[in-house]
Length: 208
Image (tube, rainbow, N blue to C red; front, top):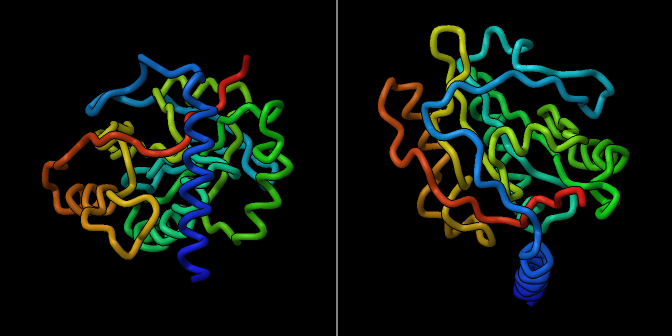
C-alpha cells in the first residue's frame, strides 16, 4: 500500500509540474548528435569552478541537466548515481547541472543544491548554471535531460541526447537503458543506437 501511494504521489506531482511548465520557454536550438560541444565553467557545490578542461583523462562525460525539486529528477537520482559509479572508472563521469530559476523555485537555489548533495552523498559534481547559459547552449529543456559526450581528437563531441531509460516512474520495469547502452557502445567502438530519444521530465524553469 505504501509503495502504491508513493507511486501515485509521484505521478500527481509530475503531472502538476508538467502543467506548470507547459507555459515555460522551450529551446528550439542547441546541440545535435555529432556536434562539437563548447567548454563550460560552472560553480560546483563545493564552491570550486569546474570545466571540461578538468577532465583531461576522461573518455567522455555524461552531462545531466537536472534539479532538486522535479519529481522526475528525484526519481532518477539513484539511477544517475549508479551510472556514475559504473562508468566514472571507465572514463565517463557524470556531471550534473542545475539551470532552474531559483527565484521562482527556491528549492533549486545554490544553497539547496549544497544541502541535496550532502543528503544524497552525490559522488559526482553538481554545478549551478545560474545564468541558464549552458542549458540554452546545449538545448536542454527537461530535467533530467542527458547529453553523452565522447572525446574525439581531444574534443568533446555529442554522442547521445535524451532520456536515461524508458521508465521514469518504475526502475524495476525499465526495458531499455538508453544512456548505459550508449556508453557501452562507445566503449566498444560501436555506433550509438539510438543516438536520440525524447527527454522525459519537468520543463526547465526559465527566468522571466
